[in-house]
Image 1 (tube, rainbow, N blue to C red):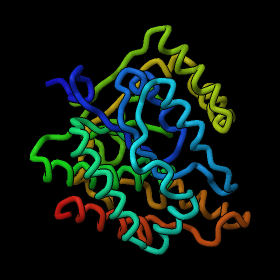
Image 2 (image 1 turned 90 degrees about the horizontal axis):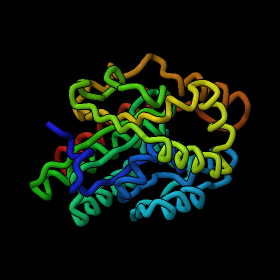
Image 3 (image 1 turned 60 degrees about the horizontal axis):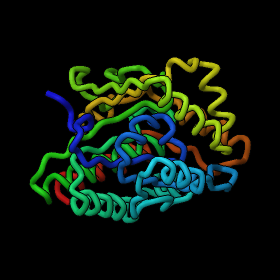
Amino acid sequence: MESSLNHATALTALVIAHPGHELRIHGWLERERPLVFVLTDGSGSGGHPRLASTAEVLHRVGARPGSVFGRFSDRSLYQAILDQDLAPLESVAKEMADALVEAGVDAVAGDAIEGFNPGHDLCRVLADAAVAIARRRSGRPVASHAFLLDGRPDDTPSTVAGIGEAGGAFHLSLDDEALARKLAAAFAYPEMKGEVERNLAEHGEAAFRTECFQPVDPEADLERLLDDPPYYERYGERQVAAGHYESVLRFRQHFLPVARALRELGRSG
């Protein structure tokens, strides 16, 4: 059965943690022109937002910013997880659910849980909660898919945490013109220059021709999702040592309770 993410009449939405993630699925973005929600302004530890560059990407392809568009700084989102501050997170999940229902969205794509960045992983949990609430409120099916940000862009992420079986995967293969536009958009995004160059050096241009989306299992066992500790804990220890952050965000101590609460919101909110 064809995924509604790949259906010509589907109304779609994109939920990403940081500005710039849309570049990974630029071909799909260009084709679908979805409603786009971005959790943070992309300011990172340096405090320099990059939301304007994403707004320009969306404008060029005809996609629409949603009501949640840079709602948090990276630091404030990180702190909300550390403090187990659920109120702003639950509010965002409900706001996105309302927007999905109002727009009649049939399918949502967003960041996968990879254990690379807690903001990416939280984005997945927030998207899942919003989709669950939207399904219940509207009485309509809403498909939910994830794509990789840390892994190879042309990988089918069937073994990634919280992602369903490979049978429901959707792959979009870009022609030469679409790939050229995707690469041009990436090189025209000044704040992502270093990351774009690293990704191209690591994977090669051909890997960015295929965009992979995998159905999400919203009930995947959170405690078995990631390596213990995940990469972001080890990176966080280095950031604390360098003086960029005061505390290390831990999966079991900080992320897991927040994720469980947001899952419960998705079931009952």
